[in-house]
Image 1 (cartoon, one colour):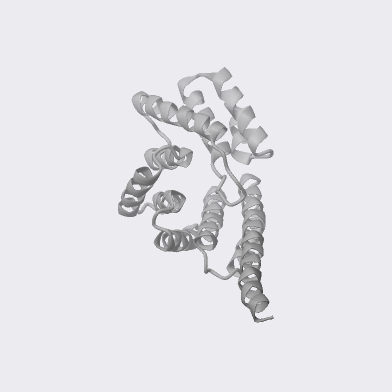
Image 2 (cartoon, one colour):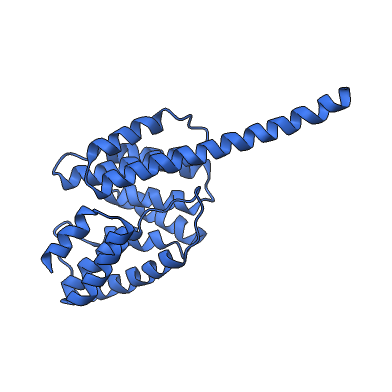
Length: 236
């Protein structure tokens, strides 16, 4: 009987730990999907609801802080698009993203998100440090190009031809990486539709209407109802 007790309880704890891990992954995937939908559809109330539910999760895992930061970033982006103050959401975004990076310094995705939040908040020093860490850990991460593009485009959106060409090359490579990247439910999956839409915008800047239409259609396949992609399509 003593032998069974010694072997049973450790096995039970492993099983409970596995179930808890699976539940957390499932919860994070669901809440992230809701926040992403709210972003693409420009529905701030949907993102707010996802953020409230994320706050109810115990922050004992770097992924919880990561997805809190991602949802806060989405809230800030939608607020900015609606001409509302995004300062509070960006503050929460940076705080949670940096916590995720501190909890798991070897996780490139955490540093990518620190860089994303920092450039949206115009924190140049934080951006440079975070993007360097992300590049060192995972230079092929396709979200790197997307975040660098955010950092490179000025507020007025005016770009020189050489800058447009460089950003197009970078985003074209990122789009290919998104297509070939393998992901599981525990791996962040945001950014593909945005990379395609931004590539479409840059093609329009160069007057390449057909190429712009092609990538915008792909963006809408990746994120149906994506407001920004629809706005760009309306310009064609």
